[in-house]
Image (cartoon, rainbow, N blue to C red):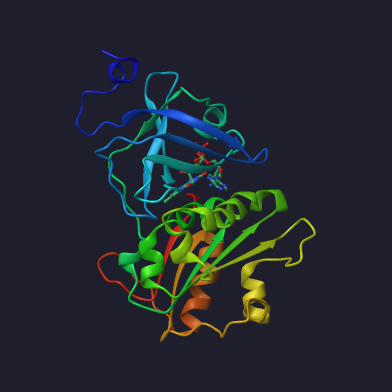
Length: 268
Ligand SMILES: Cc1cc2nc3c(=O)[nH]c(=O)nc-3n(C[C@H](O)[C@H](O)[C@H](O)COP(=O)(O)OP(=O)(O)OC[C@H]3O[C@@H](n4cnc5c(N)ncnc54)[C@H](O)[C@@H]3O)c2cc1C
């Protein structure tokens, strides 16, 4: 019996034990890591799952995490906060290649293409680690089969915190699967609330002032042509929801697809 198999729990719904393949630290608050993916683990790009570590008392500490990798990737990628004093991330931030990580068996979520009705432009609005599900969707060919234009926004406090989304979007062109199909379709719009930046402030402020659409050189949101996904703090989601409704877009779900969908990037 090999090392990994010997640690695989016997209960059919228990998390599987996967192996860390790589870890990249962006700042003292953010890092990404990749783990092995069991062949039986299926998900739709944009979904989340419970992941975690064994606690000191032998009980697992599990938290919801969006898959940042697309459905077709042989490995799983996650983009993580390091929450000060957080039960999981105060330990998770120290993982190294070869370490075990627990992976739940039931991916779920509303930030999926199936939850949106057909449209021409797709807007992906995120703050902080809320970019993670969009890192998955940006690398899914179906996104470009369904939409002519994909506008992804990412707002962080510090410019260094925007690096992950910059790397993902910059990498699209060289991606053998979606390089061609995504070419010329993606607009990446970053804003920063604390560091000096060419586009300072919150995305909501820039939407309200009209600067957002002026900057990207596109017409304002319309329910006829546009679909949106929103992932961030509870406050950001509520603020964005109000603006979606003001533009005439209605909220959808897996059961009832419509013009926009939301997911909170963390509880609280
Ligand atoms: C649907 C869903 C998807 C999620 N996806 C991700 C993800 O892809 N990446 C990720 O890092 N976290 C994600 N989270 C948050 C994650 O579940 C944990 O809360 C996070 O890993 C911190 O765990 P913790 O045990 O260390 O601290 P917790 O006790 O869970 O949180 C401690 C404090 O940190 C704040 N916090 C937690 N997560 C974040 C965050 N991501 N950004 C800013 N502040 C935060 C909390 O509000 C709380 O005040 C998601 C949460 C939900 C509900």
